[in-house]
Length: 124
Image (cartoon, rainbow, N blue to C red; front, side):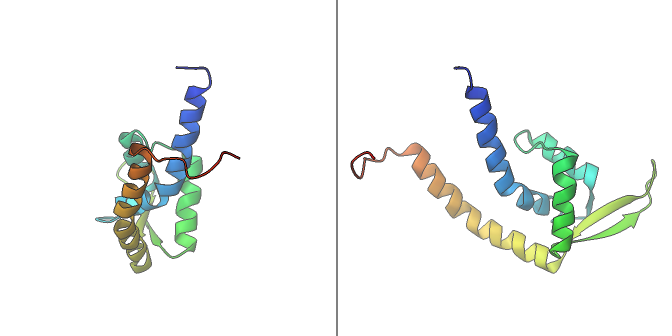
């Protein structure tokens, strides 16, 4: 591996994560409400989507402002009350739309990554 390769890989992973993180967080709430640290652990367990509180909590605030999630406080058996996030109807609709679009998008990217494409013109 050449010097700088790991930086390039990290940059590519960061850009991909930014593009899909919102929908992955919404998907984690599909079946039940979740609290912030629980979401962080699930993302961390995925490996590629591991992120920080400094990314997830502002994202959750934006999802709430955009009416994609709602929040409730619930007592915790171990510590202070927790804020739980749940999908709204708008959040479920956004997730459903992403779920419909994603396979075609993923396929298009896969085609570019796996199929040689001839040059279509003179180099600039």
